[in-house]
Length: 171
Image 1 (cartoon, rainbow, N blue to C red):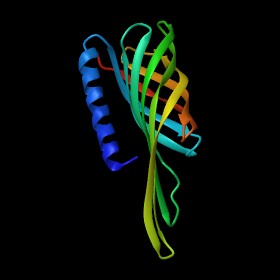
Image 2: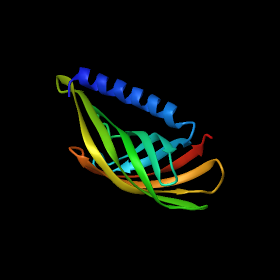
Image 3: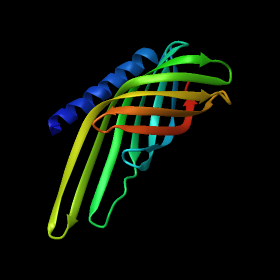
Image 4: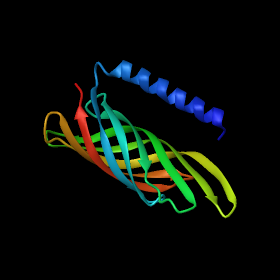
Protein backbone atom coordinates (compact mmCIF):
# COMPACT_ATOMS: atom_id res chain seq x y z
CA UNK A 1 0.00 0.00 0.00
CA UNK A 2 1.42 3.37 -0.96
CA UNK A 3 2.30 6.02 1.60
CA UNK A 4 -0.40 8.41 0.29
CA UNK A 5 -3.07 5.70 0.63
CA UNK A 6 -2.04 5.01 4.22
CA UNK A 7 -2.20 8.71 5.12
CA UNK A 8 -5.62 8.98 3.47
CA UNK A 9 -6.86 5.90 5.36
CA UNK A 10 -5.63 7.28 8.70
CA UNK A 11 -7.33 10.65 8.09
CA UNK A 12 -10.54 8.95 6.96
CA UNK A 13 -10.62 6.72 10.08
CA UNK A 14 -9.97 9.71 12.35
CA UNK A 15 -12.79 11.74 10.77
CA UNK A 16 -15.10 8.73 10.95
CA UNK A 17 -14.32 8.19 14.64
CA UNK A 18 -14.86 11.87 15.49
CA UNK A 19 -18.16 11.95 13.59
CA UNK A 20 -19.25 8.72 15.25
CA UNK A 21 -18.39 10.01 18.72
CA UNK A 22 -20.27 13.24 18.14
CA UNK A 23 -23.35 11.44 16.85
CA UNK A 24 -23.66 8.77 19.50
CA UNK A 25 -21.94 10.16 22.61
CA UNK A 26 -25.09 11.85 23.87
CA UNK A 27 -27.16 8.65 23.82
CA UNK A 28 -24.54 5.92 24.12
CA UNK A 29 -22.72 4.42 27.05
CA UNK A 30 -19.13 5.52 26.38
CA UNK A 31 -16.22 3.57 27.85
CA UNK A 32 -12.45 4.03 27.41
CA UNK A 33 -9.64 1.86 28.69
CA UNK A 34 -6.40 0.01 28.25
CA UNK A 35 -5.50 -3.51 27.16
CA UNK A 36 -2.74 -6.04 27.36
CA UNK A 37 -2.72 -8.94 24.93
CA UNK A 38 -0.85 -11.57 22.99
CA UNK A 39 -0.76 -12.13 19.21
CA UNK A 40 0.09 -15.60 17.93
CA UNK A 41 1.48 -14.52 14.53
CA UNK A 42 3.84 -11.91 15.92
CA UNK A 43 4.40 -14.10 19.04
CA UNK A 44 4.63 -11.06 21.28
CA UNK A 45 2.85 -9.20 24.05
CA UNK A 46 1.12 -5.98 23.20
CA UNK A 47 -0.50 -3.02 24.91
CA UNK A 48 -3.27 -0.84 23.63
CA UNK A 49 -6.19 1.49 24.09
CA UNK A 50 -9.86 0.72 23.52
CA UNK A 51 -13.02 2.77 23.12
CA UNK A 52 -16.39 1.08 23.49
CA UNK A 53 -19.72 2.73 22.64
CA UNK A 54 -22.83 0.82 23.64
CA UNK A 55 -25.58 2.22 21.42
CA UNK A 56 -28.47 -0.01 22.48
CA UNK A 57 -28.85 -2.77 25.04
CA UNK A 58 -27.65 -5.34 22.48
CA UNK A 59 -25.48 -3.42 20.01
CA UNK A 60 -22.23 -1.57 20.48
CA UNK A 61 -19.17 -0.53 18.52
CA UNK A 62 -15.58 -0.60 19.61
CA UNK A 63 -12.29 0.70 18.27
CA UNK A 64 -8.87 -0.23 19.55
CA UNK A 65 -5.22 0.24 18.78
CA UNK A 66 -2.57 -2.27 19.90
CA UNK A 67 1.22 -2.10 19.69
CA UNK A 68 3.16 -5.37 20.00
CA UNK A 69 6.65 -5.65 21.47
CA UNK A 70 8.27 -7.69 18.69
CA UNK A 71 11.64 -9.23 19.34
CA UNK A 72 14.56 -7.13 18.09
CA UNK A 73 17.94 -8.55 17.20
CA UNK A 74 21.40 -7.06 17.16
CA UNK A 75 20.93 -6.12 13.51
CA UNK A 76 17.19 -5.50 13.12
CA UNK A 77 14.25 -3.76 14.72
CA UNK A 78 10.64 -4.80 14.12
CA UNK A 79 7.48 -2.80 14.83
CA UNK A 80 4.01 -4.34 14.64
CA UNK A 81 0.70 -2.61 15.37
CA UNK A 82 -2.96 -3.04 14.57
CA UNK A 83 -6.04 -0.84 14.39
CA UNK A 84 -9.49 -2.44 14.81
CA UNK A 85 -13.08 -1.34 14.39
CA UNK A 86 -15.73 -3.83 15.57
CA UNK A 87 -19.45 -4.19 16.00
CA UNK A 88 -20.37 -6.01 19.20
CA UNK A 89 -23.62 -7.92 19.63
CA UNK A 90 -24.46 -8.50 23.32
CA UNK A 91 -26.02 -11.92 23.90
CA UNK A 92 -26.12 -11.60 27.68
CA UNK A 93 -26.48 -8.35 29.59
CA UNK A 94 -27.18 -8.40 33.30
CA UNK A 95 -25.93 -6.76 36.49
CA UNK A 96 -22.72 -8.81 36.71
CA UNK A 97 -21.67 -9.75 33.16
CA UNK A 98 -22.02 -8.80 29.51
CA UNK A 99 -21.16 -11.46 26.92
CA UNK A 100 -20.80 -10.44 23.26
CA UNK A 101 -19.78 -11.61 19.82
CA UNK A 102 -17.70 -9.29 17.70
CA UNK A 103 -17.00 -8.78 14.02
CA UNK A 104 -15.19 -6.01 12.23
CA UNK A 105 -12.22 -4.71 10.30
CA UNK A 106 -8.52 -4.88 11.14
CA UNK A 107 -5.55 -3.00 9.72
CA UNK A 108 -2.18 -4.49 10.69
CA UNK A 109 1.23 -3.05 9.87
CA UNK A 110 4.69 -4.51 10.27
CA UNK A 111 7.93 -2.68 9.60
CA UNK A 112 11.51 -3.85 9.91
CA UNK A 113 14.73 -1.93 9.72
CA UNK A 114 18.12 -3.60 9.58
CA UNK A 115 21.75 -2.52 9.73
CA UNK A 116 24.62 -4.95 9.66
CA UNK A 117 27.19 -6.76 7.54
CA UNK A 118 27.57 -3.68 5.35
CA UNK A 119 23.86 -3.49 4.50
CA UNK A 120 21.11 -1.28 5.84
CA UNK A 121 17.52 -0.68 4.90
CA UNK A 122 13.93 -1.05 5.88
CA UNK A 123 10.72 -2.63 4.70
CA UNK A 124 7.09 -2.24 5.72
CA UNK A 125 3.80 -3.86 4.86
CA UNK A 126 0.23 -3.15 5.89
CA UNK A 127 -2.80 -5.36 5.32
CA UNK A 128 -6.54 -5.31 5.91
CA UNK A 129 -8.26 -8.20 7.64
CA UNK A 130 -11.51 -9.28 9.29
CA UNK A 131 -12.06 -9.78 13.03
CA UNK A 132 -14.27 -12.53 14.44
CA UNK A 133 -14.45 -13.27 18.16
CA UNK A 134 -16.12 -13.11 21.54
CA UNK A 135 -15.68 -11.05 24.67
CA UNK A 136 -17.02 -10.42 28.11
CA UNK A 137 -17.30 -7.38 30.38
CA UNK A 138 -17.41 -7.96 34.14
CA UNK A 139 -19.53 -5.37 35.97
CA UNK A 140 -17.80 -5.08 39.35
CA UNK A 141 -18.41 -1.39 39.93
CA UNK A 142 -20.15 1.61 38.46
CA UNK A 143 -17.14 3.09 36.65
CA UNK A 144 -14.69 0.15 36.58
CA UNK A 145 -15.18 -2.62 33.99
CA UNK A 146 -12.61 -5.43 33.57
CA UNK A 147 -12.98 -7.33 30.28
CA UNK A 148 -11.51 -10.11 28.18
CA UNK A 149 -11.64 -10.81 24.44
CA UNK A 150 -10.47 -13.49 22.08
CA UNK A 151 -10.59 -12.90 18.35
CA UNK A 152 -9.17 -14.30 15.16
CA UNK A 153 -7.93 -11.95 12.47
CA UNK A 154 -8.50 -13.31 8.97
CA UNK A 155 -6.15 -11.77 6.39
CA UNK A 156 -2.52 -11.79 5.33
CA UNK A 157 -1.50 -11.38 8.98
CA UNK A 158 -3.75 -14.20 10.30
CA UNK A 159 -3.45 -14.42 14.03
CA UNK A 160 -5.33 -15.25 17.18
CA UNK A 161 -5.37 -12.35 19.64
CA UNK A 162 -6.15 -12.78 23.32
CA UNK A 163 -6.51 -9.59 25.33
CA UNK A 164 -7.70 -8.37 28.69
CA UNK A 165 -8.00 -4.97 30.22
CA UNK A 166 -10.06 -2.40 32.02
CA UNK A 167 -12.62 0.06 30.66
CA UNK A 168 -13.91 3.11 32.51
CA UNK A 169 -17.44 4.50 32.05
CA UNK A 170 -17.38 8.13 30.96
CA UNK A 171 -21.07 8.97 31.37
